[in-house]
Image (cartoon, rainbow, N blue to C red; front, side):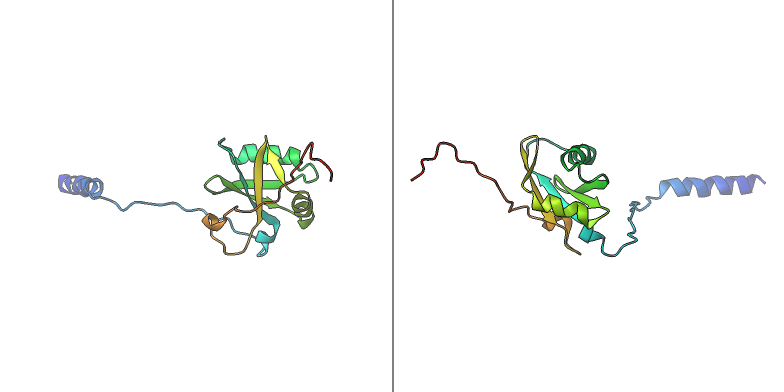
Amino acid sequence: MATDFDDLVAKMADLFSKASPPVVSLTTRESTNLNDWKLSLAIKPFSKRTYTPGTICDVLLKLWSFTKVMQVSNLHAGSFLVRFNKKEDIDPILKHSPWSISEDLLAIEHCVPNKAPGSYTFDRTELWIQLHGLPII
């Protein structure tokens, strides 16, 4: 009996002394709709401030009051993925751009299938420019 116990202790000690390979847990979001990307926008606020997905969602729900449901998640390096339930929610956002959050310009790109999160460049956006006091010729 003592031999069985000693054997068990030796095996358990051996378990803890061997280096185990690192474990990486991955989660996946399974989409029920293969065209999910059509209802998504990639956005990036040009700011020195740091935004969280929750803050972005709260601000955008107020800013885009015509839509009531959206999901915001981190995309890449200060950019966010915004998912909507209906295409009708995206159309006015794109039509009435540019948008800003607390005076920070918000760059918006339509999501593209199979595009890597880091490949959204946010290098173009529409702007409104007002020129006050410009003489009329």
